[in-house]
Length: 312
Image (cartoon, rainbow, N blue to C red; front, side, top):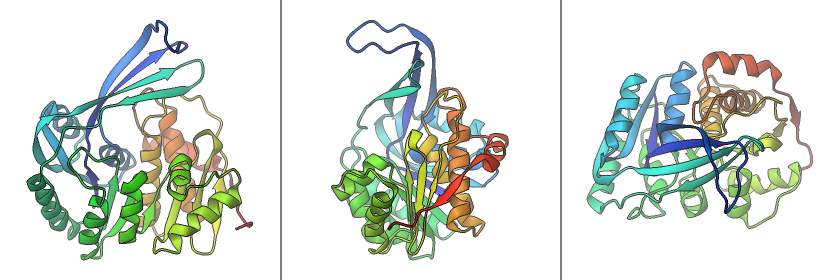
């Protein structure tokens, strides 16, 4: 079982406009609302790719029923720490003319120290039942930046492989617990290393900082520029697959799901990257916040073109 941990669940409201006008009137062509949060998205992608997934983390008393109902309808089991307050709503504006999403995200209702302790207890309870745990996304107010470091440390006591997808201090603190794999996007990697990265070699060398500090694998999502994966002695680049982009929300989470399946199947770095890119591409081909399907994944897999990176 792969358990995903979501500290900051949300309701994603995706609206589509023909051409986004900053400071002007934008008429909505289409809209939809979906239960989300990065860990929840990873679990949904895993489930739709045919893997068994389980969700834990925080959920809230107000609008939390949307999270629970969605997971029930998706046949994904869960066990959340219930917190007083409302699930945040994230607005995503999809500019159809540019294929670009503008995100306006709420920060999340505060969490108490008692709820944090309850979550730590749940992590220990489920780590012993999980082959892998995925820690991803932002944290609500009241949660310290060391939270992923603490949770990963607890999970690793049971021999559970840990995957981390976070940014800023959450990432920098989390890597101190030496997760098996991290998945920053290019902006997050630049922010974490304090460097502007323009070539594949520069990206690979920046990722080596984490490898040298105990992380085994670094996957870097680069949007329309493709993706990379870096290990101790090798690095690979995947070209973007030319497809019609219908929605980018959850693409990175789908990539994480693809990586997780690759780890579970014992694949090498090159094949893992193929899985991640195929899953992410299968997601961007779907409307709004809908995520990859198994059929879409299988259709994209033979289209992934990989090159080895040698200048690092």
